[in-house]
Image 1 (cartoon, rainbow, N blue to C red):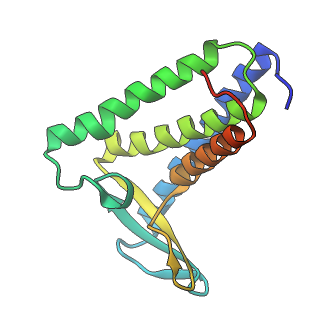
Image 2 (cartoon, rainbow, N blue to C red):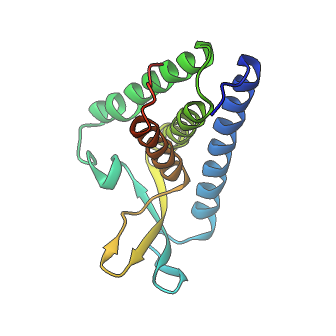
Image 3 (cartoon, rainbow, N blue to C red):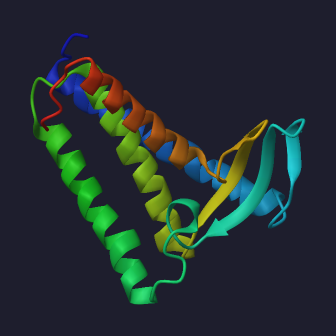
Length: 166
């Protein structure tokens, strides 16, 4: 894919990040208001489930029992530092591939969405689960989808031979 102008790329990075954070936060707020905690609401038969779970740990509940100070450092401090560095690097580096910019913008937007929850609520609101036969996902949210999409796009670019040096 072509390399966009520096000005154009900065605008698109900001738009993708803000849209990701906005959709994530709006969906979580709606879930907190309209879906009872621990509900089981089939949206598409038993394949797409809507629920409301507050996750005080990381992915799949990892770290829920950590000491509160350790949790703040690991789940708030470090992610904030990494997201700031990533955003700074992609905003200041010139001539980055468009797909690379999109991938990092999704990762940053999703990371910020979950970080906002951790800081504002002390937990992350998760509300979707997929069940396809014996395959079942953990419970996740829009921010998780954005981060996963960004990482999968980065993996795709790596397999295509792109250098990801930012």
